[in-house]
Image (cartoon, rainbow, N blue to C red; front, side, top):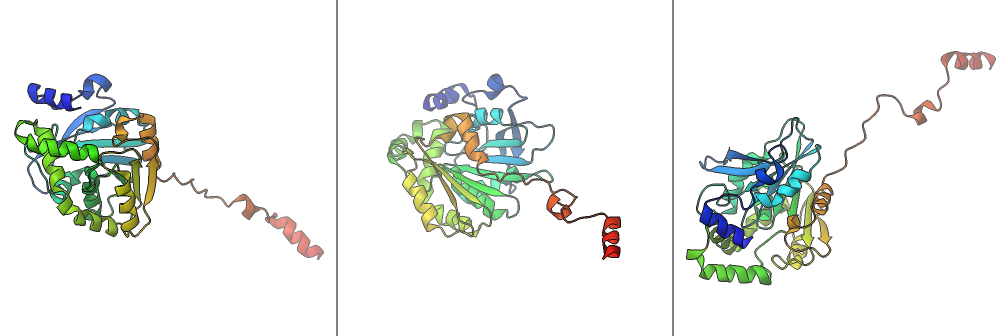
Amino acid sequence: MGWACVECALTGRAEHAPTAETFGERAVRRVAFQAGGGLGWTLSALTTPRETPAPWKIVVITGAPSWAEYWAPALAALGPEREMTAVDRPGYGASEPATAVGDIVLQAEALAPLLKAERGQKILLVGQSYGAAIASVMAAAHPGKVAGLVLMSGYFGEPGPTARWLVDVGAMMLKVLPRDLRNAVREVSGQPAQLDRARRALASLRIPIHVIHGEEDDFAPIEIAERLVRETRTRLPMRFERVEGANHFLNDGPTEALIAAIEGCIPPRAAPRSPWPSLRAWSGWRPLARRSADMVGA
């Protein structure tokens, strides 16, 4: 991944792994949209084209660095009952601006257009790693637009040994780092002071919140995620899913397992209600003529 970032910086290519060449635009398509809040940035995302809107739209707010193409296998594997959009956040990939946008509230405002849904469609908002805090703020800022929130490998200010080493080394090499890595170091370094806003956002939500975390995560230790669930008083209990043997990059593991984990956050479709009475209701029914005859005989 690091070498791909350097290669893109040298060649001017936005995508580390060009998705159109691998999957084709009928499966995964790159789209552009204008950032919310009148910020004037053009942002980029990968999405699943659908002829008709799916019942659920899954919106992925990626981490730091923020590269949507690493979610492309999951997008391509989704069935027709689901849509997914994964974004290059502001300051990364094919999105503007060129500089880091370290304010998580500003990031949430810029990404708000992703929460647009078709009539009858529900949105499951997935915040991955650094994107978890941003997704929390987005969900709180737009009540009624998000049906469920997933904090996947959520990063909340306390790095594991690998992340700490990368940030420390990156801070000493900022001037020579490619744009995306440089912006990631700046974002992560400035996140802790903003986390009260993310925690307040979580506490205010009236929707299901799911926390999915790999037990071998050495970027954002699972103990931090467990503490977040234990100490954050939410209106509904948060569901915690511990993924055995998984590391920080759940989207880099088996695609089937990733999709299954996300599906576990979507409530099953209720069985359609029949307009006719149930069999139990019919069990005491007798034709009117028979009932009349019984009464005459009595």
